[in-house]
Amino acid sequence: MAVLGALSVAPMTGYAVREAIRDVLGHFWSESFGQIYPTLAALEGRGLVRREDRAAPYELTGAGRVRLRELLAEPVQRVPPRNGLMLRLFFGRQLGPDACRELLLEAKADAEQQLAGFAALKATVAAEGGPDTPYSLITISAGEHTARAALTWAEESLAALPEPVTTPTETDLPGGEQ
Amino acid sequence: MAVLGALSVAPMTGYAVREAIRDVLGHFWSESFGQIYPTLAALEGRGLVRREDRAAPYELTGAGRVRLRELLAEPVQRVPPRNGLMLRLFFGRQLGPDACRELLLEAKADAEQQLAGFAALKATVAAEGGPDTPYSLITISAGEHTARAALTWAEESLAALPEPVTTPTETDLPGGEQ
DNA sequence: GAGGACATGTAACGAGTTACATGATTCA
DNA sequence: TGAATCATGTAACTCGTTACATGTCCTC
View 1 (cartoon, rainbow over the protein chains, first blue to last red):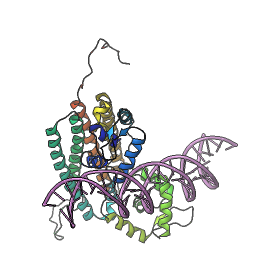
View 2: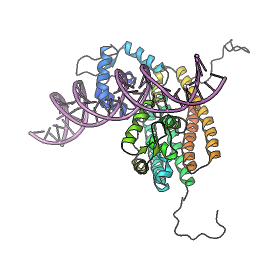
View 3: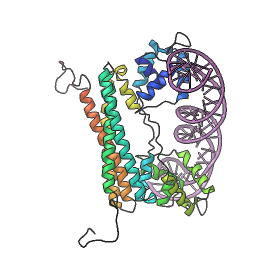
View 4: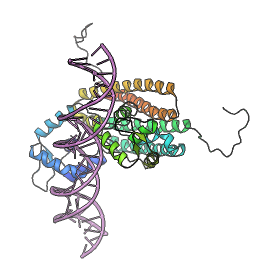
């Protein structure tokens, strides 16, 4: 689906398909390198893509466009979740509060970096313009919302973790929290 | 890591481990059924878990607890993203605005259902109480933030899509739906 | 003429899922 | 006694990744 979709935008060599998937779809999709050429060969065998000769870029055939629409219309199948960060935090008692704080700080920095990336990407896409722009902006917006949520969550969780400040010594003043 | 972590909470049979992972870690982790028994056998072979006899539940050994802490301390490796919903929306021009709206409505309903599930889960976990509760609440909070972000995003995107209102026709009579 | 990019492929390996096969226990 | 649930395991198969192997084209 990703390969056909990429070729629906413009004819491309396999190499360019890989770069397009990495750079344009990168924030929500990925294809391993060794996957793309076999896929293109299979698609060519089924008449969904074609190329003039071995040096020319692949282009979508009519049948390929039909097939792409079929694939896009198929129900979204969700992948089984596997979030290593959550797994570590869930067993945070085994890991220790300090390491958990470290993980949350990483997550926060990560979210901030992502937000910056999305802002830049949004500017680029909006400047280019084109028929696919509104749909592209929707996916970027999803990334932004998710990253902002991660940022807020990390900050809240850091505040909620026990011993949020370094305790210098056992100098508890009277009237402190129980 | 997930299996050792589950056994760090309480001794369990393989069957119970599977249910614990599905019911407790389900919103951020999953293990396939056919994965758990081989894993338990391997862990037993390495002396990280033990059981009295073939009928008894597995329990963590001292070495197993050490190994779990090692694993938890390893850096989080992120999985390559693969979000079928975003892929479909990105190529939304091929798919058509109506189908895109449908996808967004599904995503919205999904997020709402998740939010309800998290609220219930939070209440359960908070009521039980225990040493792992604060960490558990952190992961639930992550789910809530993400789901809320998805909900907001879906609503915004629905509003942003072209033709957001149904074109009024003469079939706009009371009870005219269906 | 050397290094980097563009470009195309293959093969081995590994992780994980589904489906199958089997048996014990509980309870209506 | 039959069905549902609890319980343990195996085997085939699919998917995807990493690493390898090869070659061209351009430019400094």
